[in-house]
Length: 424
Image (cartoon, rainbow, N blue to C red):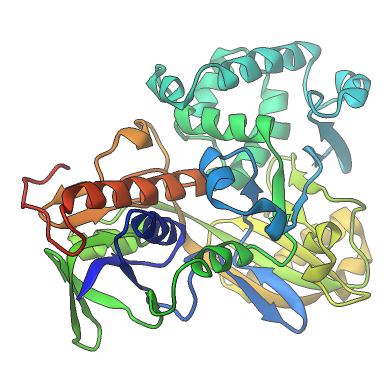
């Protein structure tokens, strides 16, 4: 019998396992797939490294700084800001707090009015004020309503805020909580968006390497859970002093018998090319109303390990995940051809990732994730995004807090905690 069973080997489950071991409790992770990481994985295809959908490390995240070994990950940052397409060409939009020499360029940029650029100072000051508890205690609305109430023009909302943050939340109209928006804005303001040199899968691999052999069982899908036990799909029952559910939100809801959470989807196309369509480590955004493209990036422009020598990797992201890939690709290539010319037709498709449950919907209300009780009742605990919030920070934070709750409830490692009423 394991001390504690953890269902799910994503970032929340791995963080939970590491914290349990730090407190003298031995975990057993049951992971349904053939690798740890959940959605944070990197596949190898013809010498290219393909992350499963567009993901980045936000270096400011407090829990990421605490848990990850950044030097070992060899993080490669994007240029702060983005290249945004509007009126038929690309324009550079820079973070002038981190690139002050580009202040003149930003003041004359058509991304917004001069008043908009002054309002950015107030928005930044608001997002950075106080600690995270104060951030989540503020009056809440939706992000689009917040921007409009602050006086931002339709021009900057359409050309920058919507395409940039739609790529974060997978919500094109910014119908997300102002709490979630402020949290993400703070992350971009205070840290880099970066990729590990060897791909996003290096992150869960780094965490898993800190656990002793035998702590993780792969290809072990859990079909049913109970008070301190889990039953695998093949019928094997595994018991422990406690059980922590650390899967993604839809899988956690299925195990608990809760209603399925609303989710947002995304589709990521990967292409191999002889040369990148833009120079430098930039995120490219669609600031023109309409079209399929949300964003484009060239991971091989950040790290040479993403592509074989002499080749380049291009990722194109489309919101939603319901269209047939072949039909979607034909329309996407036509749109990309309007951006970059006939060379697009020579790009060779490597893979398409359609992720219909990429993120839970983050519409208000979004309370402080750090104040949620990980204990559901008896010997069952929950971490991850079902009853929390998406992001690497909150995944790691929820895993650590669930582990602390389990350790506090176990008087001696391996002894079950007393049954208490459900806390949800």
